[in-house]
Length: 305
Image (cartoon, rainbow, N blue to C red; front, side, top):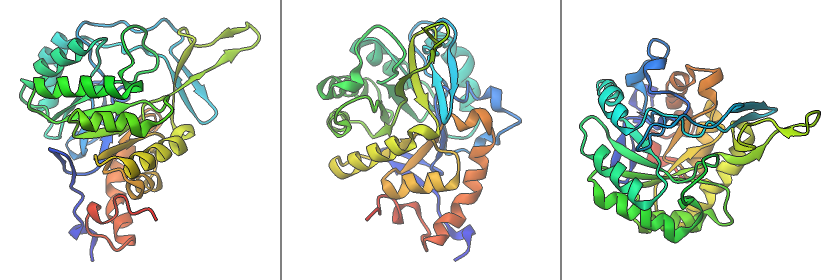
C-alpha cells in the first residue's frame, strides 16, 4: 500500500481525532505561542495549559530543573483562570480547526464539576481533560490516588456536561489499574497515562532543595519506561481507551505506546527543546504503520504479545 492510503484517525470513546499526535497541557502554552512554528491545524489535538476557577500565580522559583534524562517542574498550575480563558484564549483556539481538549483542575469535586459545566457549554472545544494528578500543587484532594474519589469526580464532571471526559492519572500510586477502573466506572471516555513522576533535586553545597516547592514532577525520556508499564497494566485490566504520555520524542516512542495499548499520545517535554517534533511525527507515522503492513491505527493498537 502507499502511505497516502493510511488512515490516521483514532477514537477515544465519544471523541474522534484526525490523528493520534497531541500536545500536552502545560508544554504548549495557549497555542498562540507556537503559531508560526507549528502548523497547528495538523495536530491531532491541542491541550492548552490547565485552567483553574481563579487565576494562579504558581509556585515560588525555582520552578524547573533540568535532569540527566528529563525535566523536573514545580510550576504550580500558573494560569489566567477560567474567565480569562473563556474570554481571551478559547475563541482563538476554537478557530484553529483542530480538536481542543481543555484541561481543568480543582481542589474539590464541586470545583471540577463547575469547571466542566462552564467549559462544556462553550462552542469550539472537543473534550475536557480532568487533571486529577498534578504532583506539585498543594491543597485539595489528590483524586488520582484513590479509585473511589476518582470515580466520584469523573462521574460528577460527566453529569455536568455533554462533552467527552478524559481523566489524567498519576503514576505515584501502588496500582494504577485500580484508579483507571475508577475513572472508567465514573464514565470517562479515556484515561491519560501518565502525569509526571514525583521527584526532587538537591543543591548539596547549600544543603537545600533546588526547586522552590521542594519537590516537583519529573517528565521526559526518564519516565517513558514507567509510562509504558502503566499503559500496559491498564490495557490488560480495564476496558477504556488510553492516551500515552511520558517521554514521547520520536516515532519509535509513538509506536511503542500504540502497540502497548495507547490509542493516541501526548507530546510534552519534547516541545521545549524540539518545538516542531509534532509535525515530524505526523509525517513519519504513515510509513511506520506501513512497516507493520497496517493501513489503520486500529490494526496495531494493543497488539503487544
